Length: 90
Image (cartoon, rainbow, N blue to C red; front, side, top):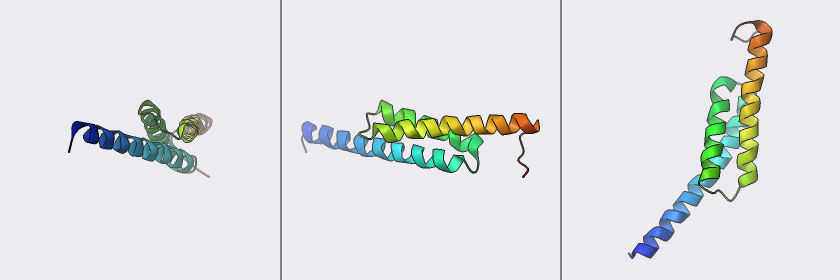
């Protein structure tokens, strides 16, 4: 295997990983609106930032995952501030 083939495979693997990170950030951000938003929100933001840094071809999905992650954190802060604690009660 030549170095150009190895480099091409490494780029393809990095692109595939970036796509997976963008999709995972979207899913974590979406699920985080309902449960575990204090954990899933920051995870979604970090994965979206990594996907964008690695040059994902699905930039919109990564941006949406980042926005949902930020919304998760905002929802947590609003609920924690309204109840004056960090537990949920319905």
